[in-house]
Image 1: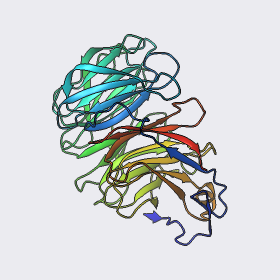
Image 2 (image 1 turned 45 degrees about the vertical axis):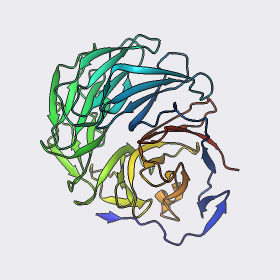
Image 3 (image 1 turned 30 degrees about the horizontal axis):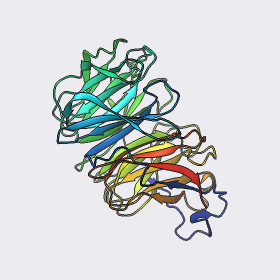
Image 4 (image 1 turned 120 degrees about the vertical axis):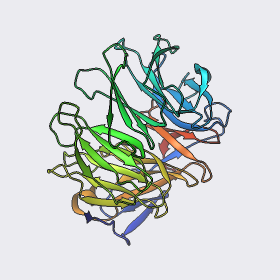
Amino acid sequence: MKFITPNLMPVALIVFGVIATSGYAAKPRSFVGSSRAILGTLSSLTASTRLGDFDGDGDLDVAVANGRHWPQQNFLFLNQIRGRFNVQRRLGADWRTTYATEVADLDGDGDLDIAVGNDMAPSQVMLNDGHGRFVPGATLGELSSVRSLTLADLDGDKDIDILATSRGRPNRIFLNDGHARFGNEKNFGGPSDSTISVAVADLNADGHNDLVLANRDGQQSYVLLNDGQLRFETKVYFGGKSDETRAVAVGDINRDGMMDVVAGNIGQPNAVYLGDSSGGFETRVPFGRADGQTYAIKLADMNKDQSLDVVVGNVAQSNAVFFSNATFFRDQVGDAFSETRFGDVTAATYGLDVGDLDGDGFDDIVTANSGSLNRVFSNRPKR
């Protein structure tokens, strides 16, 4: 594997608290929270937050997954005006051990539904009535140790399928019949993989969505290539055999037209694996702390410079936005990223999502904190 290590001693200028390496015209941003920028007043065991316009009023609301291993109530928070979440609704009647509430139009009626993934409790689809009120839909297979859900069209039939990762048990694909029924299912990956997260993208430009698996417990992470018939038999490894990868995301970080993999790791730096024309990921660019504790990753253009940045959620460390340095990825000059931290260093951020909550054109951040309040961080110019 080829390593590209960012310059350890860059020529740098401190601009409003953001390190701007030479050749990189940074657009400084900060991520501002407050005592009122919270989702409710309960300190639940929150595993994830997801954004979507559930009530059809044109702004982004939040679905919150609570419980992890212990049953708790899931909630919706409805955006009233410019990121003020003053209406809270229960999502489902039962308290369940929820790790994931993922959002898409599953039944094709034009509104956003929610797939709920639970640890050894029934995982289920919740169907939207178009006004942000949800009724139970299909149950997803047998009980399993679900750790994440990913929603994507895997079979190319224009509806959204569901992938469920289950740590230490088979991962599963639930194929949608177009009406939010998921009776056709199949496994992917190894039968005892400790898969904690999966990302979906066409990595080898053959027109079929492939899978990127983040594995823990001493199992190497890898890509599964789709042969067009939903047979994922070709495996492409990335990272080290001893990596503890907790989260993955896919996007074109270096803007070369090929998809890259971003891995969030525990006890080691995070890394970008640059995709090449052969479908491999041989070049590794590490970033972040040497003792990182990253549990969640999102890719978005947070400073509107036409490049993807990396937003990470950490446990017992500040969360951070890593602004990508186009000069580094083009010419290997300076650092790969400049880091802006946000949030409480004592929080356990298991998940996060990004989107424009207040309508100012910049993506904001919502964090899912296990054991403390879930928070909203507004994307603002650095002062």
